Amino acid sequence: MDILDVIKARDPAQREFHQAVEEVVGSVQPVLDRYPEFRKAAILERITEPERVIIFRVPWMDDQGQIHVNRGFRIEMNSAIGPYKGGLRFHPSVTLSILKFLAFEQVFKNALTTLAMGGGKGGSDFDPKGKSDNEVMRFCQAFMSELYRHIGPDTDVPAGDIGVGAREIGFLFGMYKKLRNEFTGVLTGKSLGWGGSLIRPEATGYGAVYFAAEMLSTRNDTLEGKKCLVSGAGNVAQFAVEKIIELGGKVLTMSDSSGYIFDEEGIDAKKIAFIRRLKNVRRGRIKEYLEKYPQAEYAGIDQALDYNPLWDHPADCAFPCATENEINQKDAQNLMNNGVMLTCEGANMPCTPEAIDIFLDKKIFYAPGKAANAGGVAVSGLEMAQNSMRLAWTREEVDNRLKTIMRSIHSTCLEASEDFGESGNYMIGANIAGFVKVVNAMLDQGLV
Ligand code: NDP
Ligand code: 2IT
Image (cartoon, rainbow, N blue to C red; front, side, top):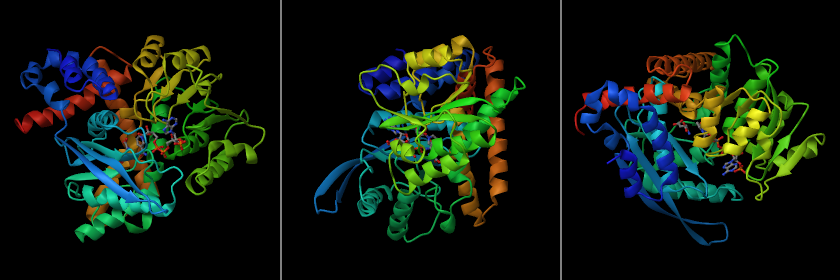
């Protein structure tokens, strides 16, 4: 029976997981034909089944004394090349399917970084939005009071993702340290004063833009003067925008889950600093941008539309940095009609399969998330290395390492695409290169 049929029969409701698996399985068929030992070792059956799934109750009390119960998860997907590594997501949309797709993608992404990290992902359907700092702290403590027994610096090292930033990592780390009575690099994305790495907050966004610049450089082109559409206003989007501006691009849009802003004059360094304060300190909405910059335009989400108007402006580049499946077939068509020649995924799986087909068919530059957004987890790997050495590198040192890693991921994807007759297809290149590395490690380690 086909592996996809097996997976769908086993977990029929896990649509996002099926989507992520379908893409990888579709890409690696020529690898399986070239290396028959992979099929013989039932590699697809093994690599699509998590090594371990932990699901737990998270009871916590709000500021009014009312008790809430959320669900906590950790998917320990694959440890062939290192300890499980991957973020925690706190968002009401979190399900087992979402976290399994993220954990699955993480396995190949981490392999591409060249660092020794397996793949995992976790989180909760808890919604931090509108909660007080104390409520977020109590939730994080309750979450860690179960998770702590499953993780460790050589076992499983979580980090941030949607809804989990520096504040949450601090609360989670504090509880882990108290329960274990040990100060170790069990989480990444820590604050600078107690084991964090310089450039970790910037790494995913910067890395995605470095990847885009690498793609452009293959045609002797740069980001200078390019009009860019960016979605999201969180960690990844903020630093993608900062780097695009630094490299001479012009950013026209940003968004949150309520709507998006369009600033024809471009979001410059001062404006992005304002957005960073608005989002990270005041925890406000992107709409408030207009209070400071009234020449910009704002549009709320219109549920009646079957496309996102953010992607319907004349531009050169698109950087989806918010969430999965945020660019559908119609959005991709709109991007093509508006002259976009590069789509670079800061988010995980932000383009639907139909949208990707359009990009590949039109032969524009398309960078899949597992390659383009790997800078975040790569610098997490560098944070782990610094923690082990009890040393801290300078900003310049970490940024240079990040650049080198992104350059190497870019060339690895290109080479793999060429090797398998799909030259320039970064999606197939990323899937194949990540897959081969993990599979070889699995084969070396026997049937475990
Ligand atoms: P943040 O929580 O910092 O920001 C997320 C942003 O996306 C917010 O602006 C949020 O709006 C918006 N958003 C979230 N969910 C939705 C939704 N369902 N519809 C519309 N907008 C939404 O998260 P990050 O920036 O860290 O993560 C963004 C993406 O990047 C995710 O796909 C994540 O998996 C991926 N990623 C993150 C890495 C990291 O290091 N942080 C590394 C690699 C990938 P609102 O505030 O209204 O919720
Ligand atoms: O999707 C991702 O790569 C992340 N959320 C970052 C994971 C990490 O361990 O830094």
